[in-house]
Amino acid sequence: MSTTTSRRTTSAPGGSRRSARPDRAAWGFLLPFVALFLFTFVLPLGYAVYQSLLTPVRSGPLGLGPATLGFAGLDNYALALQQSAFLESFARVLLFGLVQIPVMLLLSTALALALDTLSHRWAGILRAAYFLPYGVPGVIASILWGFLYVPGVSPIVDLLGKVGLAPDFLGYDNVLWSIANIVIWEFAGYNMLVIVAQLKAIPQELYEAARIDGASTWQTAVRIKLPLARPALVLTGVFSIIGTLQLFAEPLVIKPLTSTVTNSYTPNLSAYNEAFANNNIYLAAAESVILALVASVLSFGFLSLVNRKERRDAR
Image: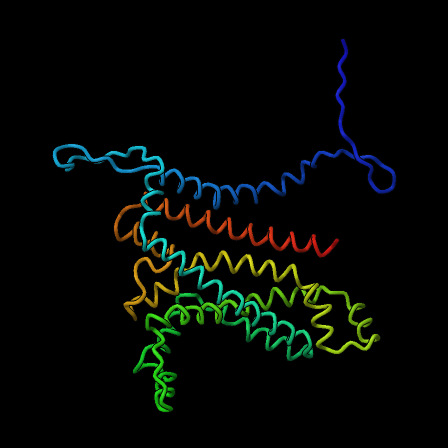
Protein backbone atom coordinates (compact mmCIF):
# COMPACT_ATOMS: atom_id res chain seq x y z
CA MET A 1 0.00 0.00 0.00
CA SER A 2 1.36 3.30 -0.96
CA THR A 3 0.98 6.43 1.16
CA THR A 4 0.92 10.04 0.06
CA THR A 5 1.75 13.11 2.02
CA SER A 6 -0.33 16.16 1.34
CA ARG A 7 0.99 19.64 2.02
CA ARG A 8 -1.16 22.77 2.08
CA THR A 9 0.03 25.31 -0.41
CA THR A 10 -0.89 28.92 -1.15
CA SER A 11 -0.56 31.01 -4.26
CA ALA A 12 2.26 33.49 -4.27
CA PRO A 13 2.42 36.62 -6.42
CA GLY A 14 3.35 35.73 -9.95
CA GLY A 15 1.43 32.47 -9.94
CA SER A 16 4.03 30.33 -8.13
CA ARG A 17 2.93 28.19 -5.22
CA ARG A 18 4.66 28.03 -1.87
CA SER A 19 4.20 26.12 1.34
CA ALA A 20 1.87 27.62 3.97
CA ARG A 21 4.15 26.26 6.71
CA PRO A 22 6.44 28.86 8.28
CA ASP A 23 9.92 28.89 6.89
CA ARG A 24 12.61 27.45 9.13
CA ALA A 25 14.49 30.72 8.82
CA ALA A 26 11.49 32.53 10.33
CA TRP A 27 11.57 30.20 13.32
CA GLY A 28 15.28 30.90 13.61
CA PHE A 29 14.61 34.65 13.84
CA LEU A 30 11.79 34.09 16.34
CA LEU A 31 13.76 31.75 18.58
CA PRO A 32 15.76 34.45 20.48
CA PHE A 33 12.58 36.38 21.20
CA VAL A 34 10.72 33.27 22.37
CA ALA A 35 13.63 32.27 24.60
CA LEU A 36 13.87 35.78 26.08
CA PHE A 37 10.10 35.92 26.59
CA LEU A 38 10.08 32.58 28.38
CA PHE A 39 13.08 33.49 30.56
CA THR A 40 12.07 37.04 31.51
CA PHE A 41 8.26 36.76 31.64
CA VAL A 42 6.85 33.25 31.78
CA LEU A 43 9.47 31.78 34.13
CA PRO A 44 9.27 34.54 36.82
CA LEU A 45 5.48 34.55 36.64
CA GLY A 46 5.30 30.77 36.92
CA TYR A 47 7.72 30.78 39.87
CA ALA A 48 5.65 33.49 41.61
CA VAL A 49 2.50 31.38 41.18
CA TYR A 50 4.38 28.36 42.59
CA GLN A 51 5.61 30.34 45.60
CA SER A 52 2.14 31.71 46.26
CA LEU A 53 0.84 28.17 46.79
CA LEU A 54 3.35 27.36 49.54
CA THR A 55 3.51 28.08 53.25
CA PRO A 56 6.07 27.29 55.98
CA VAL A 57 4.96 24.52 58.32
CA ARG A 58 6.39 24.66 61.83
CA SER A 59 7.12 21.55 63.86
CA GLY A 60 8.19 20.72 67.36
CA PRO A 61 6.93 22.09 70.70
CA LEU A 62 5.32 25.54 70.31
CA GLY A 63 6.30 25.50 66.64
CA LEU A 64 9.93 26.24 67.46
CA GLY A 65 11.28 23.31 65.44
CA PRO A 66 12.67 23.50 61.91
CA ALA A 67 10.22 24.76 59.31
CA THR A 68 9.33 22.84 56.20
CA LEU A 69 7.39 23.97 53.15
CA GLY A 70 3.84 22.75 52.78
CA PHE A 71 1.10 23.17 50.20
CA ALA A 72 -1.14 26.09 51.15
CA GLY A 73 -3.57 25.99 48.25
CA LEU A 74 -5.26 29.39 47.92
CA ASP A 75 -4.76 30.37 51.57
CA ASN A 76 -2.22 33.08 50.72
CA TYR A 77 -4.64 34.61 48.22
CA ALA A 78 -7.45 34.53 50.77
CA LEU A 79 -5.19 36.16 53.36
CA ALA A 80 -4.12 38.89 50.92
CA LEU A 81 -7.73 39.67 50.01
CA GLN A 82 -8.67 39.89 53.72
CA GLN A 83 -6.12 42.65 54.36
CA SER A 84 -7.92 45.98 54.24
CA ALA A 85 -4.66 47.90 53.65
CA PHE A 86 -3.93 45.82 50.53
CA LEU A 87 -7.44 46.38 49.16
CA GLU A 88 -7.23 50.11 49.93
CA SER A 89 -3.98 50.28 47.99
CA PHE A 90 -5.82 49.03 44.89
CA ALA A 91 -8.55 51.62 45.36
CA ARG A 92 -5.85 54.30 45.74
CA VAL A 93 -4.00 53.45 42.52
CA LEU A 94 -7.28 53.15 40.61
CA LEU A 95 -8.26 56.66 41.75
CA PHE A 96 -4.73 57.77 40.87
CA GLY A 97 -5.08 56.30 37.37
CA LEU A 98 -8.53 57.80 36.76
CA VAL A 99 -7.07 61.28 37.21
CA GLN A 100 -3.42 60.97 36.22
CA ILE A 101 -3.76 58.97 32.98
CA PRO A 102 -6.25 61.31 31.22
CA VAL A 103 -4.30 64.40 32.31
CA MET A 104 -1.00 62.95 31.09
CA LEU A 105 -2.39 61.74 27.76
CA LEU A 106 -4.15 65.05 27.11
CA LEU A 107 -0.91 66.91 27.82
CA SER A 108 1.09 64.51 25.64
CA THR A 109 -1.40 64.81 22.77
CA ALA A 110 -1.45 68.61 22.97
CA LEU A 111 2.35 68.76 22.93
CA ALA A 112 2.52 66.31 20.01
CA LEU A 113 0.01 68.31 17.96
CA ALA A 114 1.85 71.56 18.74
CA LEU A 115 5.22 70.08 17.76
CA ASP A 116 3.77 68.66 14.56
CA THR A 117 2.81 72.16 13.40
CA LEU A 118 6.16 73.80 14.24
CA SER A 119 9.08 74.19 11.88
CA HIS A 120 11.48 71.25 11.72
CA ARG A 121 14.28 73.04 13.58
CA TRP A 122 12.27 74.20 16.60
CA ALA A 123 10.30 70.95 16.75
CA GLY A 124 13.52 68.96 17.15
CA ILE A 125 14.81 71.15 19.97
CA LEU A 126 11.50 71.17 21.85
CA ARG A 127 10.99 67.44 21.32
CA ALA A 128 14.35 66.72 22.94
CA ALA A 129 13.55 69.12 25.81
CA TYR A 130 10.16 67.50 26.52
CA PHE A 131 11.63 64.01 26.31
CA LEU A 132 14.52 64.84 28.66
CA PRO A 133 12.64 64.10 31.95
CA TYR A 134 12.10 60.51 30.76
CA GLY A 135 15.89 60.08 30.77
CA VAL A 136 16.01 60.92 34.47
CA PRO A 137 15.64 57.75 36.61
CA GLY A 138 12.41 57.62 38.58
CA VAL A 139 14.25 57.56 41.90
CA ILE A 140 16.24 60.70 41.05
CA ALA A 141 13.11 62.47 39.78
CA SER A 142 11.31 61.63 43.03
CA ILE A 143 14.22 62.97 45.11
CA LEU A 144 14.29 66.19 43.08
CA TRP A 145 10.56 66.75 43.46
CA GLY A 146 10.73 65.71 47.12
CA PHE A 147 13.00 68.71 47.78
CA LEU A 148 10.41 70.94 46.09
CA TYR A 149 7.63 69.59 48.33
CA VAL A 150 9.32 69.90 51.75
CA PRO A 151 8.56 73.17 53.63
CA GLY A 152 11.71 75.07 54.59
CA VAL A 153 13.62 73.55 51.67
CA SER A 154 11.34 74.16 48.73
CA PRO A 155 11.53 77.59 47.03
CA ILE A 156 8.03 76.93 45.65
CA VAL A 157 6.56 76.58 49.15
CA ASP A 158 8.46 79.69 50.28
CA LEU A 159 7.16 81.76 47.33
CA LEU A 160 3.58 80.60 47.89
CA GLY A 161 3.95 81.39 51.59
CA LYS A 162 4.88 85.00 50.76
CA VAL A 163 1.57 85.48 48.91
CA GLY A 164 -0.43 83.99 51.75
CA LEU A 165 -0.71 80.42 50.52
CA ALA A 166 0.47 77.49 52.58
CA PRO A 167 0.09 74.33 50.50
CA ASP A 168 0.95 71.04 52.17
CA PHE A 169 2.16 68.99 49.22
CA LEU A 170 2.90 66.01 51.46
CA GLY A 171 -0.33 66.12 53.49
CA TYR A 172 -2.86 63.29 53.50
CA ASP A 173 -5.16 64.94 50.94
CA ASN A 174 -2.40 66.09 48.58
CA VAL A 175 0.41 63.55 48.58
CA LEU A 176 -1.27 61.27 46.02
CA TRP A 177 -1.51 64.17 43.56
CA SER A 178 2.05 65.26 44.35
CA ILE A 179 3.13 61.77 43.26
CA ALA A 180 0.90 62.09 40.17
CA ASN A 181 2.72 65.31 39.29
CA ILE A 182 6.06 63.45 39.38
CA VAL A 183 4.74 60.66 37.15
CA ILE A 184 3.29 63.14 34.63
CA TRP A 185 6.59 65.04 34.57
CA GLU A 186 8.47 61.81 33.91
CA PHE A 187 6.29 60.18 31.24
CA ALA A 188 4.44 62.93 29.36
CA GLY A 189 7.44 63.41 27.05
CA TYR A 190 7.74 59.68 26.35
CA ASN A 191 4.06 59.38 25.41
CA MET A 192 4.35 62.56 23.33
CA LEU A 193 7.16 60.96 21.32
CA VAL A 194 5.01 57.89 20.54
CA ILE A 195 2.15 60.11 19.34
CA VAL A 196 4.51 62.30 17.28
CA ALA A 197 5.86 59.19 15.53
CA GLN A 198 2.29 58.20 14.61
CA LEU A 199 1.55 61.72 13.32
CA LYS A 200 4.66 61.62 11.11
CA ALA A 201 3.33 58.44 9.48
CA ILE A 202 0.18 60.19 8.19
CA PRO A 203 0.39 60.66 4.40
CA GLN A 204 1.07 64.27 3.42
CA GLU A 205 -1.55 64.01 0.68
CA LEU A 206 -4.26 64.16 3.33
CA TYR A 207 -2.92 67.49 4.59
CA GLU A 208 -2.74 68.83 1.02
CA ALA A 209 -6.35 67.80 0.42
CA ALA A 210 -7.41 69.46 3.69
CA ARG A 211 -5.65 72.69 2.71
CA ILE A 212 -7.31 72.66 -0.71
CA ASP A 213 -10.69 72.19 0.98
CA GLY A 214 -9.98 75.20 3.18
CA ALA A 215 -9.67 73.34 6.49
CA SER A 216 -8.17 75.33 9.37
CA THR A 217 -5.33 74.06 11.57
CA TRP A 218 -7.80 73.15 14.28
CA GLN A 219 -10.07 71.26 11.85
CA THR A 220 -7.08 69.39 10.43
CA ALA A 221 -5.99 68.39 13.94
CA VAL A 222 -9.45 67.23 15.05
CA ARG A 223 -10.64 65.53 11.85
CA ILE A 224 -7.40 64.08 10.44
CA LYS A 225 -4.57 63.95 12.97
CA LEU A 226 -6.41 62.75 16.07
CA PRO A 227 -8.40 59.94 14.36
CA LEU A 228 -5.26 58.65 12.59
CA ALA A 229 -3.20 58.92 15.79
CA ARG A 230 -5.65 56.59 17.53
CA PRO A 231 -3.33 53.51 17.54
CA ALA A 232 -0.65 55.52 19.37
CA LEU A 233 -3.20 56.84 21.86
CA VAL A 234 -4.43 53.31 22.57
CA LEU A 235 -0.86 52.07 22.98
CA THR A 236 0.07 54.85 25.41
CA GLY A 237 -3.20 54.25 27.27
CA VAL A 238 -2.36 50.57 27.83
CA PHE A 239 1.21 51.42 28.91
CA SER A 240 -0.16 54.01 31.33
CA ILE A 241 -2.64 51.56 32.90
CA ILE A 242 0.10 48.99 33.47
CA GLY A 243 2.50 51.65 34.78
CA THR A 244 -0.08 53.02 37.20
CA LEU A 245 -0.66 49.63 38.80
CA GLN A 246 3.10 49.17 39.10
CA LEU A 247 3.53 52.46 40.99
CA PHE A 248 6.46 51.85 43.34
CA ALA A 249 9.58 54.03 43.17
CA GLU A 250 7.88 57.41 43.62
CA PRO A 251 5.93 56.58 46.84
CA LEU A 252 8.90 54.62 48.20
CA VAL A 253 11.17 57.69 47.86
CA ILE A 254 8.53 60.11 49.18
CA LYS A 255 7.72 57.82 52.14
CA PRO A 256 10.51 59.09 54.49
CA LEU A 257 9.27 62.67 53.94
CA THR A 258 5.72 62.09 55.17
CA SER A 259 3.87 59.70 57.44
CA THR A 260 0.88 59.64 55.08
CA VAL A 261 2.67 57.20 52.74
CA THR A 262 2.48 53.82 54.48
CA ASN A 263 4.12 50.47 53.80
CA SER A 264 0.95 49.44 51.93
CA TYR A 265 0.37 52.67 50.06
CA THR A 266 0.34 50.84 46.68
CA PRO A 267 -0.02 47.12 45.86
CA ASN A 268 3.63 46.95 44.80
CA LEU A 269 4.76 48.54 48.07
CA SER A 270 2.61 46.08 50.02
CA ALA A 271 4.18 43.06 48.28
CA TYR A 272 7.66 44.56 48.74
CA ASN A 273 7.01 45.11 52.44
CA GLU A 274 5.70 41.56 52.94
CA ALA A 275 8.73 40.07 51.18
CA PHE A 276 11.58 42.12 52.64
CA ALA A 277 10.25 43.56 55.93
CA ASN A 278 7.90 40.81 57.15
CA ASN A 279 9.91 38.01 55.47
CA ASN A 280 6.71 36.43 54.12
CA ILE A 281 7.65 35.79 50.50
CA TYR A 282 4.68 33.46 49.96
CA LEU A 283 2.11 36.12 50.81
CA ALA A 284 4.14 38.62 48.76
CA ALA A 285 4.02 36.21 45.80
CA ALA A 286 0.23 35.93 46.12
CA GLU A 287 -0.12 39.72 46.19
CA SER A 288 2.13 40.00 43.13
CA VAL A 289 0.04 37.45 41.20
CA ILE A 290 -3.17 39.30 42.14
CA LEU A 291 -1.59 42.53 40.92
CA ALA A 292 -0.59 40.88 37.62
CA LEU A 293 -4.13 39.55 37.16
CA VAL A 294 -5.71 42.96 37.81
CA ALA A 295 -3.27 44.62 35.38
CA SER A 296 -4.10 42.01 32.72
CA VAL A 297 -7.86 42.37 33.19
CA LEU A 298 -7.74 46.18 33.01
CA SER A 299 -5.38 46.25 30.01
CA PHE A 300 -7.28 43.68 27.96
CA GLY A 301 -10.59 45.21 29.07
CA PHE A 302 -9.45 48.61 27.81
CA LEU A 303 -8.27 47.09 24.50
CA SER A 304 -11.54 45.18 24.10
CA LEU A 305 -13.56 48.35 24.76
CA VAL A 306 -11.54 50.37 22.24
CA ASN A 307 -11.68 47.64 19.58
CA ARG A 308 -15.42 47.21 20.04
CA LYS A 309 -15.97 50.94 19.58
CA GLU A 310 -13.70 50.90 16.50
CA ARG A 311 -15.68 48.04 14.94
CA ARG A 312 -18.96 49.84 15.69
CA ASP A 313 -17.68 53.05 14.08
CA ALA A 314 -16.49 51.12 11.01
CA ARG A 315 -19.99 49.76 10.31
